[in-house]
Picture 1 (cartoon, helix red, strand yellow):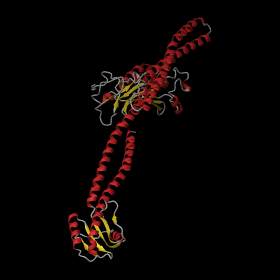
Picture 2 (cartoon, rainbow, N blue to C red; picture 1 turned 45 degrees about the vertical axis):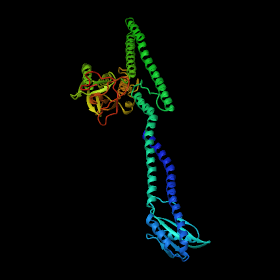
Picture 3 (cartoon, rainbow, N blue to C red; picture 1 turned 180 degrees about the horizontal axis):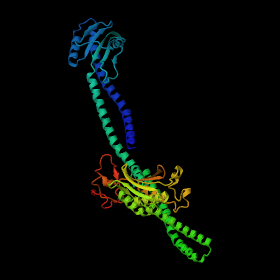
Picture 4 (tube, rainbow, N blue to C red; picture 1 turned 90 degrees about the vertical axis):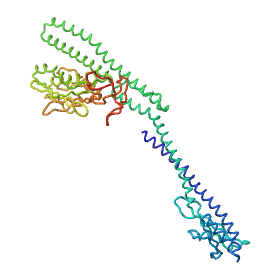
Length: 501
């Protein structure tokens, strides 16, 4: 946009210069030509007064010597002709030029003739001046001068070059001023764009400096900050309500479960005892839902605070933690990863909780004899973690709804769960600037893939400004093709070997 503004300013300046300098250049050429024409007319008029004697039959020697000397001094050819166009006398360098006959026709009719009106640098024709020789109102002949225009064209060219130089200086001044003005105008817009991206990435504390740029953009920046504050406040209130409501419901839920348990010994009817067990199961399920809501609220409250973690090590620890449960259910749980560490940047516990939710679902739905594979691979400037199972899988329409809160597949309604596991995974992955994708496994089952961006401070740059949790810092030693701005929020000691701050 800055380029467009500068080009528009420059185009306007060029149009103004063309509108001003074109008439001025034409005026300068006309003025220089008119000066020379006036001199030649004066000289030709003097020669006409001297040639009167020669045309009346007197000696032509006086006018001839005058023309010779004039030609010698100024290099201007001159000649005297009678009314019948016969040459009476001419200077040594006299040579007829285009336009001479027309000028003689005008002079022999009793009027002065001179042309052209303006001498331009690319026109090399001479200036032809013809003056009639009169005697009592009778035209006896004419004096004609042929003036070369080399010096005139040189003078006009110098004037035009001076105008072009002044115009070039004006254009350069306009360009520098336009860049400064465009920068001043667009600086709030550029900062607004950067802050918008930061807010979109999860940093709800990012704000725009509203004291820069023109007043209109200052008001826009202030309005954006007010909107961001309002949206952040609404989100905080909503998440706080979910967290507080979930937390406050735990106490009466616990008391309710205790009272339901105390009713068990007093129920002698087998059907009543069965209903009693169902009530206890429902209270446990409600407790599970509240725990999931608390986890979701905490995940959504997580700001743009990202840590550098080894995804391969986290995957190994989660597989080891879930392996006993999988073994009890006769499910094979294995890890497929390279030996090298896979450093990624995520919000706290994102990889842990996401893998826990995906492995839990895979083990829960695979059934006895199934297989669950956790694969870790580097891909697309990041790390991909895939959880493959051999369960029933999901249809295309079910995959589109899987990350909705409290959604459960129709055939999974009687299986333990709150329908919030994949929703929590989606929130954590999104807060980490990652991606969550799910697709059917072959021949059956589901593949849930997590992608997290690579830890940039671990790869580059080797020396960067001191990290800050309050904003972005410009790194002066970025490699070619790297982002211009990097955000350094927190680096966990020991997780970024070789990085020097």
